[in-house]
Structures are given as structure tokens and as C-alpha cells.
Amino acid sequence: RLVSDWSSDVCSSDLLSGAPACCFFNWLQPEARRGGNHSRRGRSYSCRNWPGDGRVVLEGESSAPNQLFDVLVMDAFSGDSVPVHLIAKEAFAIYFQHLKLAGILAVNISNTYLALDPVMERAADAFDKVALLYHWNPQQDDLVCFSCSWTLIMDRATLAAHPELRKGAEVLRQKRPFRIWTDDFSNMFSILK
Image (cartoon, rainbow, N blue to C red; front, side, top):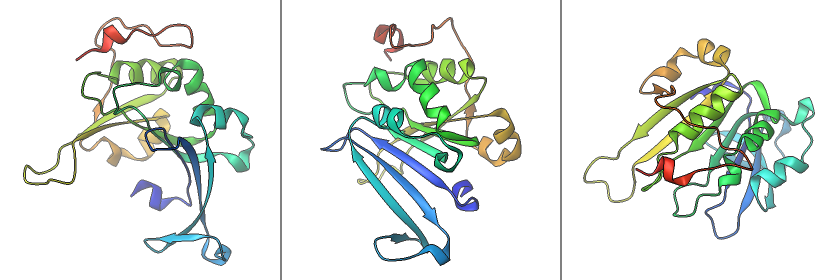
């Protein structure tokens, strides 16, 4: 709902599909609709798709003001193999460089064996941002949907402007000493469930 209130630019990075890709969705104003664009729920968008690692793709993209996103979605952690380079401090610097000041980084941290919330909290803290954790569980008879956990990371001013984001969320706080992950340091044993 928050995104629908904005004329939003959304970047989604999904490394779990058969071919890793970074997809940029640019919502279009009604007068900008033309052939080659798509429509979903009454909103038009264009989609640019680049095969490859989301972090590497963003590193190569311009961070000019007209290239900044309202929302960047990362969904790469539900498998057994966690791409640590996507949750290193250096990666978060790239993500925030490509977000508008009031933008939101949405990260699916669902994982059977690893608790990724301390990694998210430390990254948010390193960039003076706040991280909200959401858990969702389907109804017991739902055979299609699976439970999931998402973290939304944003500036404190964004959260203050949208207090509805607190509903059903836990504000992540440091619960124990935990070192931020970097390109040179990570510790999977420290996040085992």
C-alpha cells in the first residue's frame, strides 16, 4: 500500500530463480503508457531485466537522481546457500546509494537454518537507519503459501512519516554483541537457529 501511494521506481533482485537477474520496474504515469510496457492492477510499468548478480548490476548502474528507487527488493536467502556478498556492509552501501532518501530496502530473510535478523540490524545501524522485522504465517489449511520473514530498512524520517509501517512489525535492536558483516568478514555459525 505504501508503494501504491508513490509514483514508485522499484528494483527487485532475485537470485533464486533459474537465471539470476536484477529487474528494474519503473511505474509510469498514465500518459506515458505505450507499447512494450506492462500493466498490473491498473498501474503501468516498464521492466528492464539484466541477468546477473544484483549487487554487481547495481554497481554498474548510475546513481543519478533520476535513477534512484523508492523501493529495492532483495529476495535471495531462502535456500541453503546464502550469498553473503549481498548482505555485507559494502553491499548495503551500494543499495542505499541507489535508494531515494525516503526509500525502503525490503529484504526477504526467510531461512530454515539461519537467523538473518542480526545481520540486518547491524547493517541498518551502520547507516543510521531503522530495520523493521515482519513475520507472516499462512493459515494452517493453506497448501500454496509458505511462512516468510521480511525486513524493511529505511531512514528514521521515513518511518516517522509512515507510522502504519510499525503495525505487526518488530523494530530490530541489537540483542547481543554482533559484528557487522563485510566483504572480509562473516560468521555463519553466529546466526544458526
